[in-house]
Image 1 (cartoon, one colour):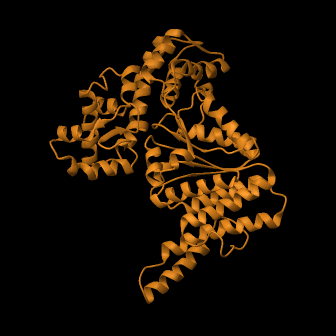
Image 2: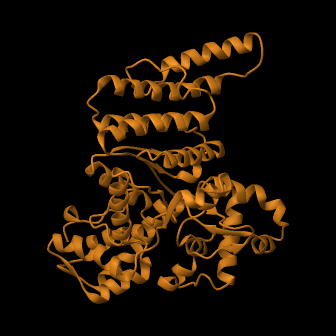
Image 3: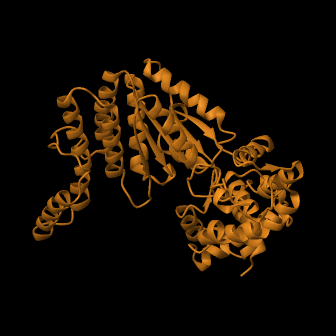
Amino acid sequence: MDPIRNPYAPGAGQRPPELAGRDEQLHAFDVTLERVSRGRPERSVVLTGLRGVGKTVLLNALRSAAVRAHWGTGKLEARPDQPLRRPLSAALHMAVRELGHPQPDEVAQVLGVIKSFAQRESTESSGGRGAGGAGARGSAGASRLRDRWSVGIDVPAVSGRADSGDIEIDLVELLSDVGGLAADRGVGVAIFIDEMQDLGADDVSALCAAAHEISQSGLPVVIVGAGLPHLPAVLSASKSYSERLFRYSRIDRLDADAAEIALRAPAAEEGASWSSDALGEMYAVTAGYPYFVQAYGKAVWDAAVGPEITVDDVRMAAPEAEAELAVGFFGSRYERATPAEREYLRAMADAAYRNGAVSEGGGASSASAELDAVPTAEVAALLGKRPQSLSPARDSLMKKGLVYSSERGQIAFTVPHFGRYLRAHPE
């Protein structure tokens, strides 16, 4: 069939032509927007799941819903090496612009607070480098850094507001001011944070404390975070009340009906169809993971004669889809690991296989079981080492987002099918 008309979209964070299986989350967020706009209490939202289940896609869809409701919105992606102040300032700048507040003086005041909040990081990161000349050079460096970096806000910074240097105090003041501006318009502000588990410990604590304070004040500010399955544990470790502060939603693989819709609907728009056998085979090889559905769908479309896509088309295109996933989805992540880390990953895959969690043949049942964690002690036993000696490799893999631990003594892949990939591609 015509590859130019291929409707499937296997891209990182790229919205598929049919966002199937997420109606519950979309409806719940519409309710949240309406309740907050009416002054009703509501919790912020956290989406969790493995790589490739569509968290970023859903996060973007929720942001679109907020825009349609005339809310101010901003989005940022957390990174382990980046403090929260600058990206959050840029996100809130965008949110204030979207609000369209009719009073320029009030808008300028809040923008000045955002600017003050953002610039405070320059002083924090440059100061405290010693006495005398080193301190002077630090101050000069801080000044130059403030001049060189800007959130693009053309108003003076507001001194004495959100610039104490204590991220928790400053964040409460900042969100209070932004929330007040939104309340004047009868709407709200939603901040969307992708890869939320990568925030620093101080920033996580401050974000939870600020969200708690804002909720108690009844201001219309909602935080929507997305991250890996251990994100709830990260939040809970920071603030015990985070379990009550957020509404957690686990984003998982699609069931068979939703996966069928994700394949059928885009094909029908292009005058094509899928046979029942072909859909069954697609679910067997993708296990309903949205990224895999799109990747296999694209390869099958290009290989099929059409207009009906058959099970033979799926089987013929499967090697091409698997080869592309091996390079772009699995291989790119594996290449980030050091030799010691790769050894640990392969031991994890072997432990999962030996426990019967992953079968050699793959398929839907094995992919579901692949979500199960394996004991770190068993991984160490396979490598013939003490668990403590493997802590550096394990911790580094966690920082790289390749594995996660939702409970003590257990470890799991963040990428579905990763264990199967490792066993199919021995070094």
